[in-house]
Image (cartoon, rainbow, N blue to C red):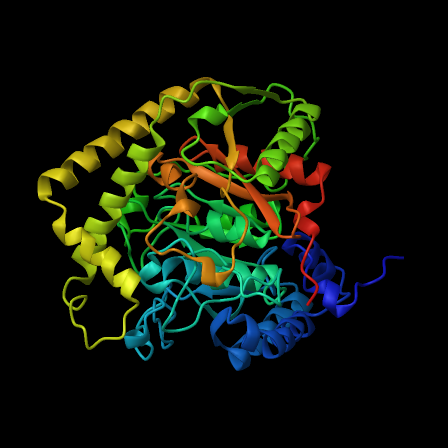
Length: 472
């Protein structure tokens, strides 16, 4: 007879396991939702993961899920699972601040397509999560609304990574079973790496962004922030697909992730590339280098061929061009008010947005052409490779007072993924000497999320890093 975990352990279970507990009738969605809400009430004042909590509506959704289940009208594996939404996805009648204090009371009139699909699958929405203002920053800081606290160190306020800072903290701290983030240059993978969770950065165009605040129409994508690769695949499957209201989805291939496929564990025939360390754009901490080596050994033991191969792409140039596209498009979005000094906007975010004003039309066109060419070159380089194994971040979470907003080291290994048009899976792979999580990532071919999920599943069946959580 299986014993139901204690509440403090229950909230850290992957969605896949929670769905089984619900299916077996060993817990109700109402009880599960109450467990997360209790932790939010107790821990969010210190962690600042949530910008808004919808306690009454979340419980109503949970009760509705329990009734559906009792009557045999289950909507799927996500039915009754409590989760959180980054505060750049609209929910009708709810404020959407996009991390900006001047927008705190701005209410949405419609619900984002991705959120509607989650609701249609029975997900219980606990609330909206904090984020870097306008989603423009990798450290995870927000001086006007408060920087979420990395839950792995409750003595020193450490960075959560950004821009999906609150979503990562909520999952890592057991305040939600899963969360939605967005990524333009690493905003899903960076906070996942620093908080010890799994995240799937989807290929731009796979998931509709209708109803989500843009940072860069060219590079933005939504991603799932979860405890496992399987969980991330489930959320992605629910949200993905054609949307008549978002042209970015119109030419995306209708690929699928088979959640029912049996995972044998063997990766025979799979080819995973490594980049020679002398090609790295920035030095990585010794603990991260060791974790990368150990992860490569795990994949090798599972049957994959793992080998270094020359990397013909210039990290520094990709960083610059990716940054130019983001800044130019961000300025176009925010130009009507970004110079209004009476508005309480983060000075660093304001500076980043304003940098887009100086980018000429010619430079922007050149950057876009380079982006198109890079996607073609990436497809060619990946023709005989299934994935590229890389560090997720060059460092683990530093103290908040050590942040240098003029530098962008955390995006060194993530921005190129957006520029190359790849998908990416961030996953936990160990801890440093200070007990802080180490995250790695896999780059994949465009719209080949299924392969990354397969690799992530195999790795997580062979290791238990993804099951570790902070003691709170």
